[in-house]
Image 1 (cartoon, rainbow, N blue to C red):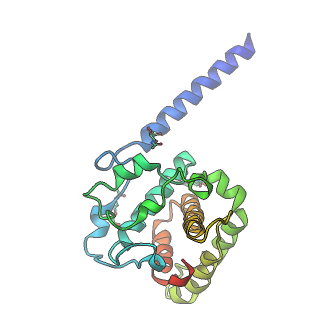
Image 2: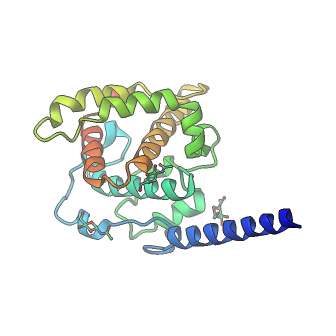
Image 3: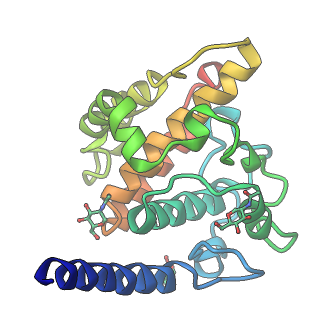
Length: 214
Ligand SMILES: *[C@@H]1O[C@H](CO)[C@@H](O)[C@H](O)[C@H]1NC(C)=O
Ligand SMILES: *[C@@H]1O[C@H](CO)[C@@H](O)[C@H](O)[C@H]1NC(C)=O
Ligand SMILES: *[C@@H]1O[C@H](CO)[C@@H](O)[C@H](O)[C@H]1NC(C)=O
C-alpha cells in the first residue's frame, strides 16, 4: 500500500515536472517556431558579421542570426535533452520571415540517422572525448584582448571533430557537420548562462574555420 502511494506520488511529480517543462519550452517566438529566438535586437546593426562557418552557411549575412539559432537550440537542449529540430519544427522556424531563410541550416535537421538523431546524452556518450577537448581548447576564447590568440586552438579542436560512421564522401561531410554542431549545441547547453562567452565562441568559429575542413 505505502509502495503504491509512493509510486503514485512519484508519477504525479513527474507529470508536474514534464508539464511545466513543456510550458517553458513551447513558448513560440514567431510562426509556431518552438525555439526561444531573440533575433530582433541582435540582428539590427550587426549586418553581415559572424562569418559563414567555413562555408557551411550559404551567403555571408547569416552569421549573427545563426548564432542566435544555435544558442536557442542550446537552451532547448538544456531543457529537453534534444539537440536538433525535426523537419516540421525546422520548417516552422525557417518560415519566410526568418533571417535564416536560405542560409542552408536545414542541413541540421534530425531524422537522417547518425548524429542528426543524437540527444545530449548520446553526444556525451559517443563524442564525449571530443566534447571535452573542445571545451578545454575553447575555454579562454573570450578572455579580454586575447580573442585571436586563443581562437586558433579552439578552431583546430572543432576541425578535429569527425563523423562517427563514414559512408560516401558527400554523406560523410554532412554527417561530420551534424556531429560537430551536435557537440557545439551540447556545449552551449552546458554554458547557457554565459551568453557573452557563447557569442565570442561563435564569432571565433564562424569567422575562422578553414573552408577546406568543412
Ligand atoms: C535579446 O538580446 C538583447 C541584445 O543581445 C538583450 O539585451 C535582450 O535582453 C535579449 N532579450 C531576451 C528576451 O533574451
Ligand atoms: C516533430 O516533432 C513534433 C513534436 O514532437 C511532432 O508533433 C511532429 O510530428 C514531428 N515531425 C516529424 C516530421 O517527425
Ligand atoms: C542547463 O543549464 C544549467 C544552468 O542554467 C546548468 O547548470 C546545467 O548543467 C545545464 N544542463 C545541461 C544538460 O547542459
